[in-house]
Image 1 (cartoon, rainbow, N blue to C red):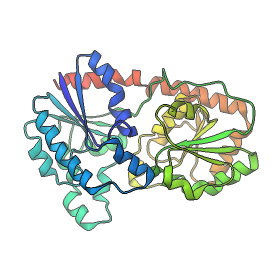
Image 2: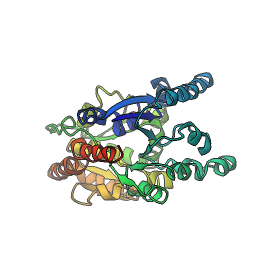
Image 3: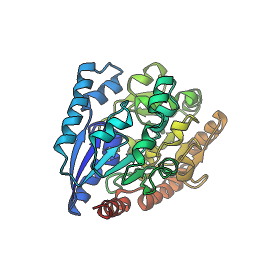
Image 4: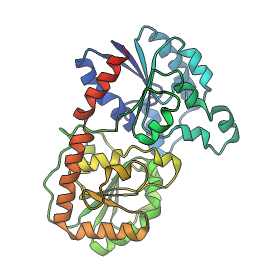
Length: 352
């Protein structure tokens, strides 16, 4: 079986690595060959991190290259598509470009809300129903959580949940030091930093009260104006990503309560838990399914709850250890690469 995988970004993007690239070895072992075709190169992701403009000429060239990719893959048995092939172009363009092909769509975020809840009336009018129209002709849809599946299944009955996962053979707990400062950690991207900003006063207070450290990985330019004493900004690097998470003592995932965030797949929580960290998170979307209150972490909705939860974990090493062990067990059982590879293989074989 031969699959053509079409992603929006190259392998520097977390979505590409999580939802596609890490599955390629297992798929090949199962006799499923995958050809990967990103729309934008890694320079595009670098521009997003740096907050610089991506040249319009390169964007136009990327769209032209996408049509070339589609033409070159006409003999593939299946198209595996991250969200959409041509962002901000109408559904009928994609339907014409893929006529006669079986397509599996992949959603790990509520991208349909980027159109149907856009602040631009023209975008809502032209593209508001794009993803629904595409899914009506899909062979299947792979969804990162139930919120996304609930949308997809209305248009594509063969929609399944495959959560975002990590390789728990690589994401491993490490012995925690007893020395101070303890480290509260967050890992993400400039676009997701917006969820952290409302609780920065709480984090600054906790860091000062407990002589702790707040380690921020991957926020880039978005966090440069938010630094306070005890807060450290580090660039994301694939080679050090696991070690950066292992350097944390507590992992956090605050979210804004908005439709797009309700479609998040909880990847940060899975990274933290796989490394044996206790977690504190907003009770938004799938976070409420992953975090078991008082067992592997805390769900916190107000600033006072954030302060209370973080302070309790900092003060109690046994609690951090017990929560971390419970989180690690959950990650291995339900959110590991090994637990989901057979399901993806089974889906693709059923469509052969």
